[in-house]
Structure formats: structure tokens, C-alpha cells
Image (cartoon, rainbow, N blue to C red; front, side, top):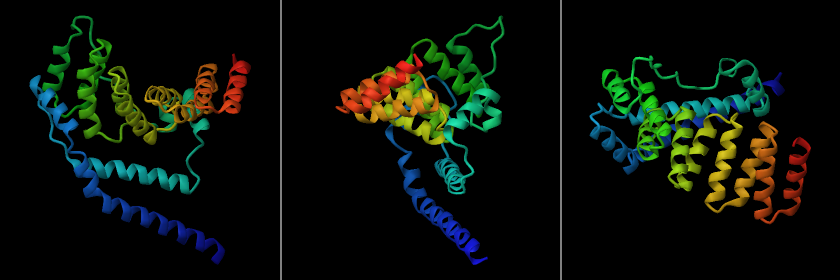
Length: 262
């Protein structure tokens, strides 16, 4: 029986060690969230007359670290499905099957309502604690290619809801459109750390890294996208990036995989 108890004791000690690390890092992480980007985005939203909610940094940070800890426990116990399987099951059964975090859709507009900025601002003023309304405003700005205001909204949302991978991905998209490629890459990494079943986000991360001059890391992420969803597009991007990074053999292998699919 002892050979069964010892691994469990080791596992419990590992979890307790992770908890100790989290508790020690909470003040540091909370302090780090009070950067100028958050203040700037909050000021810009307030300038539009929005009742911007004060951020509870400790609560948000604790929620994020607890989610990371839970992912660690699942991986340590080998309970988390392989990323490829998770993505395939998600395609077949939808988000409810995989349990992937996804924000509720914004309130739909009726034909009698005008789709303009003021509509979304009014919704936020009526329900300032409903973050779906902020998300809807951000999507509206993106649809109008107003990426500067959209990024302010998603900086605000990622500070208040750091465990939502979609908010990080939309912020990354805005940064990319504004040619802030390094910030875009960091936001895509934050999104993928929370949900690693999104091949298109690995591809987008690769694009950001490539634009930021990191062909090697870009190629790795293109290949990750292809491993999740075999696609000529992903393999071709990986081939070109590996070629740029001077890895000829990897480039040829990715090119052959692309030709087989294409």
C-alpha cells in the first residue's frame, strides 16, 4: 500500500507548494496591475461619461491564480484532455462540452434600435456592473476599426476579468491593428495560458512574433496551431518562418505537410 500512498503525498506537497507561491506573489501581482495602462484606459472611459468601476486587484488576482492552480492540478493528475482532443470535441459539441470560458453574448439589438456608440454607452450607464455591455462596446469599436478606443475597453476588461481568455484575445487583436506587436504577442500569450485549445490564436501569436522580428518563436506557434487543427495555412506559415529562422529541414517538413493537406 505504501507505494500507492507515497505518490499521493508527493502530489499533495506539490499543490501546497504552489499555494505557498501564489500567496507570496499576491501582493506583487496586485501591485503590478496598477500600471499606467489601466489608469489611462479608465480615464478615457470616464471621459465618455461612463461609471467606471473601481478594480478590486486582490480579488481579480486571486481568481486568476486559482484558475492557474486548478489547471496545474488537472495536468498533474492527467485529467485535462489533450489539446487536440479538446479542440475536436469543442468543434463537435460546442463550448458547453469542454467547459471553455466564454462571455455571454451582448444584448441583441432590435430593428428599431440604432447601432451607434451612444446605444452601448447608455447600456453601460444603466448596468455599470454588467461587463457584457463593455464587451459589446469594444466589439462595436472593432467593427468600426476604432482600435484605439477598443483597446482602452479591453485593457479595462482584462484588468477586471483577467481570467477571461476572449478579452485578452480581443485586446491582442487591437494591439496588432495598432502595430503594437510586442503587446499583441503578450496578450495572445495571456489568452492561450487560459485556453490552449484555440489554433487561430496560436497562428495570430505567430504573426505578432514574426512582425516583432522573432521568426523562430513564430514558427513554433504556427506549428502548434497546425498540431491542433491541421491546415495548409498553418503549415505554410510555419514553413516560411522556419526558413526565415534558418532551419531548412524544419521548413521542408512543414512545407511537405502543407502540400499533403493542400
